[in-house]
Length: 478
Ligand code: NAD
Image 1: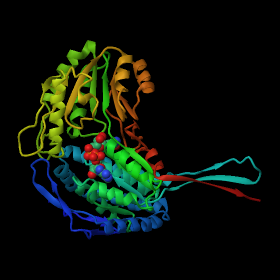
Image 2: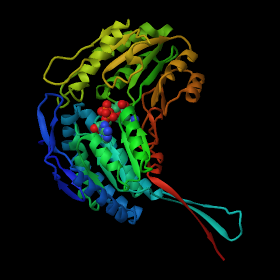
Image 3: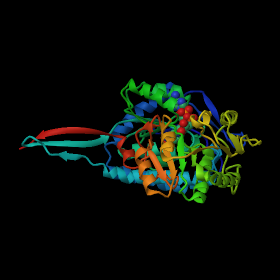
């Protein structure tokens, strides 16, 4: 199956737009050009905005049951096209095709779950303090949505926004990542082929700051949903403020992993290695700061090292691969910088530490021990296949370390103590905490951060709520 011809979706039409600008999409496994991505002109963006308002006025008036019929049909079409979409996701993003399949499966589950949940948007009747008066609180779709998403999960980053928005009755204009456009286009094609009315979904591409400035300067969008880094999130929030556009911000993290002496050490070491190198560590909830209790430090590190050395790196389309390339060449230099800075600050390099020489952007799975707080990697999100480890002695100390950064996305702990688990649930400043696993999300659970990791949720009923506005009315009767 070849990589598809890339188009934008504007006002119900698949189009190259009216701009003559475009950019190549590069395969990170071998540096070849996969396709050419058209960019939207300002006039194309205006057309998308106008159609999103028209689409909203059609879609919001349809019953949740009719909306669900279309969304369910799109889920079936994605299933029919499953293998082609998964392979192209790997081609453009690099992750092993086994991971692409899991990601697409989750994306389809998200679409189905939200399509169903859209039928359960309830308001409430509030008892009145005045006779013959009724108070009513209704939940209505908030309006046309604009969304921008990162490249690391080309299917689920898009679907978390599209499924929630559409199920709530909103229209949505999305700018997926220019590095991974084919997956978003495949999702769009499934929805349009399933009968989604024109304008309800628009997909545009371009120079990201230019697109966001144009879209957010318009009075049409009523909601912005962003998945990406903290600095860009802050910038977009400022743009959205000009038009009082409400926001959901799914931003970066730097997730602590607390490995206590009373845990199942073998299981913890295996899970940590599998979790760390998933998607080459390019995951917002990736475990990124490993704190190991003194008494088990050496034993845990020995086991962890064995698992890291066993990670098989290669082209994601090849059989038996655990880790593919980084998304683009630019990420290699960033990884090199983290490793050399950590080593010059006194950390010891146990495994990896450099690029793997080949045509693509491959970086070796890397393990560092005794990494001091002064190393950049202990405060800046690495977003790559590097596991920095350090020691701790007490529960109080590790809570302090875990909470010491401005991020608050995910956190993990391995412990056999119910008491420790209880304290962590209360004290750890993270939107998501997993104890004795690295599992922090399912389609039905709230996914989102605290502090600089953002606010608002995707997943669960919370992920529908962010696309709804509460409207109150009172009525005198009798
Ligand atoms: P980034 O913020 O630079 O880019 C993310 C996406 O936003 C890209 O598609 C990019 O094209 C787009 N973008 C960049 N500047 C923009 C602008 N001015 N206007 C509109 N769009 C813009 O981040 P990155 O380094 O490419 O991606 C990784 C970051 O994303 C990490 O910090 C990671 O933790 C975060 N992330 C968060 C979540 C989450 O759910 N919390 C999920 C995935 C990734």
